[in-house]
Image (cartoon, rainbow, N blue to C red):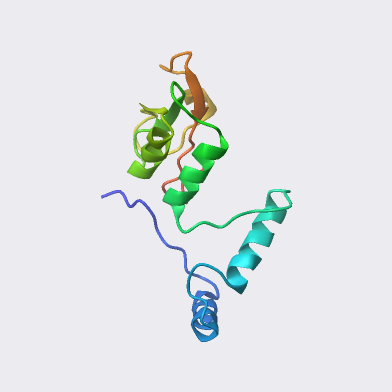
Length: 134
């Protein structure tokens, strides 16, 4: 079996979890959400960032932000989760799966034109396993 995700818990997760429980903010908002949004905005060099509930919601937001729509083709690797294709399809776009090689899970520039038509609009670089080199 190929794991889709391997959690990495090697820091203060227990301390932070207890802090959330004690403060009463265990979902939707609170100090950790604000800290995360500020840190992420700084990391990507922007004034603002918005946290969402999960990766599927993040993919939906990204698809809308990219203004994907009918006739837009987005290349995604064959080994990925359904949320990647679903976010594209919900905008009216077409998810095109690209086989990238045995044991690989990341799209790389050399995969971008291999077998893709002129209608390709975007490429979704899937990172299913954190330990795969980019």
